[in-house]
Length: 162
Image 1 (cartoon, rainbow, N blue to C red):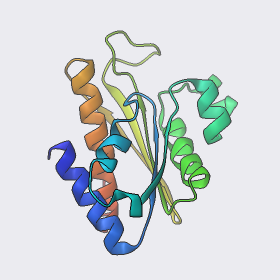
Image 2: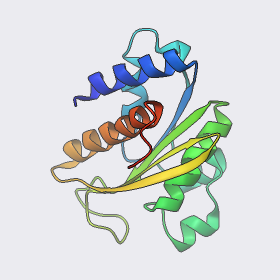
Image 3: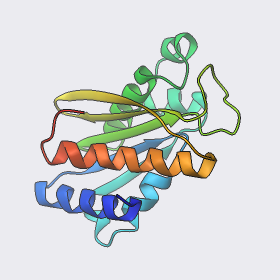
Image 4: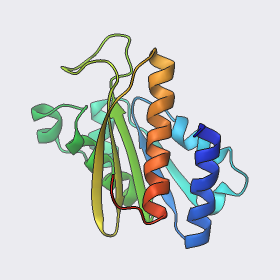
């Protein structure tokens, strides 16, 4: 599904359920927040988006632990989980979603380009997914943003299997 269509569905579901969402983005650089806010009426369900490109920002703004970043790195499930939990808290939102990964063209950490971890946090806990996307930097970033919004939609629709 195309990015705008997924964002439109996510906003509709959030409105229907009376929930809010906050986003924490690294490799997508704000694409998810932009897609959500492109939807008319998104201000009812979206209030906070954090682009946490640096590890320092991930720690200071989102509460990602130094132990996680030093031990596992920025591109891992634990970082995605802590980003989602952190932005949910910082944004005082019902749901927090996150993304961190290697968009390329050269990998900064010990992962192939296209490796992306996404997170979803709500009052029931946090889940993460690992993805391996192909294409150039723009394609990987777009696919990552779509994956985060698709996860959000699945969870809001009550689909728990990932």
